[in-house]
Length: 418
Image (tube, rainbow, N blue to C red):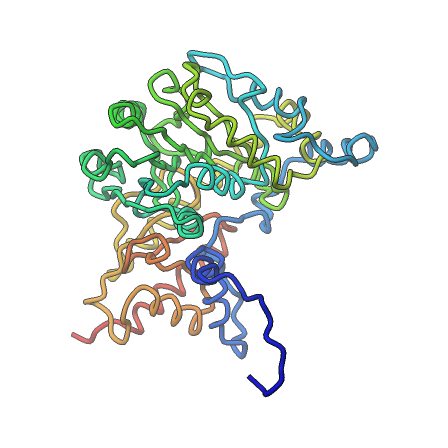
């Protein structure tokens, strides 16, 4: 410090930068920074699930009309009520009530700024000294980031590739103790592209009940299933165990920039109310931001007027892209796909380093691929699974073909000489 200079009493929060670098955005920024600007190749974004840029994933006009109508009504330029406006919460409760053995009310629905804020809410309200939470490996790294920020201990249970990425329930029972507050499941699976069947979800619910923990069901990709396993929402088992469901219109309607999500409490026995979780959710939302009011106001019309053929077209395109991805990867000896994706927009690939030269690990693979081929793929270490890769297939099919051809060329160029 210079002589006589004032000593300032502020500084940045320690640990925040470290937590943020482990997120999907953190890794994508690192990889994009490694793109060779002298390379004339089009960047192929296989690193994150946002197909909204591509013609094959264009939003339905019914949703656009709903936004325009809400905005032009001039009735929704105001602040929102805490947790969201009643018409939107009522419409979402009706949407989510289908096939449930109990009834969700609007009071069970809280609107959030996408699933991202929902994750922030649930991790923040469950954090207390000494508590721990069970997270899937591989999973979605924003959970780890918020746990680190809130000093909530993380314990990882494995998803088993040899069993179609099912939860290792024996590990869940071993990891849990009297300080475990919850387990997170992501279904349909990000990053694995799996879809849990009814019987497996039932076992998860029974295990959580046995352990006395709630289930956080991340269903950001709800209904995005195109394989042989039908999608079943975790809230079906709300009579077995308390469930906090996170969802949004981001993926099914392909509008991630609209930032409209929900947190839903499935708790017909009132356990979450008695434990103070409901009051904590309301308290957190009282001191945080709300989704834009006119977006909320459009929700009833979006849910009512979106035709089934829009969803069918999106599912058909994703199925086509998943087939392309799986078949192309089969042609690359140094990459292994343990299970063909059946849902969401992702697939996990095992990186066989023994077949490659000058590649140290998954991060090195992704950095060099970005630099040499302008293809962005997320390293598995971001999902707590070293030397794996997460690939999104939710882009224009022709661009997906091109990107995977470049990945194949890259692997051939770096293959060990026989």
